[in-house]
Image 1: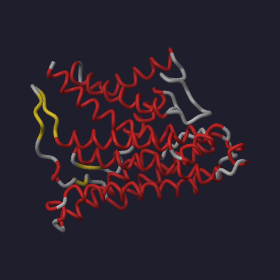
Image 2: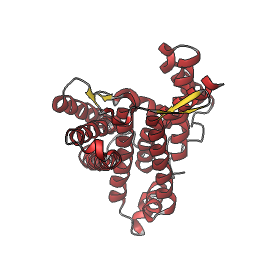
Image 3: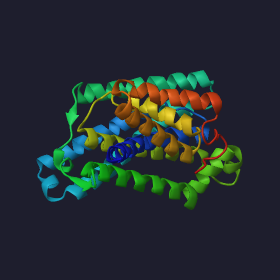
Image 4: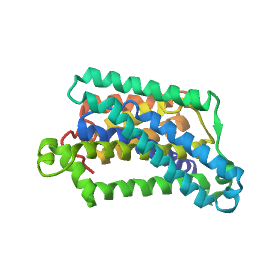
Length: 303
């Protein structure tokens, strides 16, 4: 039982990482029916910005005296950077192609993904960058299993971001405008909603969440790499499809399911096939429920 609970904590942590990335896919799709295949690079860029900021603050001695303030600053700046980057990508790679064919948009997305990944490689190098180990030590023992401080931090920040996104979408004027644009862009424009602005902000919010996940992954695993966004990006896309593309709740649920599948298959079957089992579940769900667990949602950014 203790072993199961330990793996459950691990699964929730990993699933939270995937959920934060998957939200960007599903929000953009809910607004303009576009799969942003460059989204995984925002995750990597956030991880790199986090390690750069934390490493500098650690070299100045700030991490030893004010670790939580430093962590907060790193999250805010990295998320802001990726939000601005995503808005730029949307203006350059997607906005001019809104009336173009789906194939043109797909090729533009793939090209931007390659461009951003190679940009990270050229500017940051091909070797891993290591995160400062200030938060890496210590754990809370609960019965026969442990919860590390990093897992507590990751679960806490992930939970706050997910709750914050739900409140933003459901309880704010911006969220109402996002849902109106997703439901009927023309009608939303007629009643005064700037669809271009809402689309850009949707890209920015999704990229900011991916950047937060990038920092959490960097802290959790200890390092980042220029191509780290590819595999988690594919899995997060699978999570969004699994939950129901266009559904925010579905993206969260899909991320948790993918994370749990990976951890429990590695723990009870074989770590070599954890990726295989995750995609087997995706294929099975799509075979029996083609629109995902909560149903494909292209007319409403549903929570």
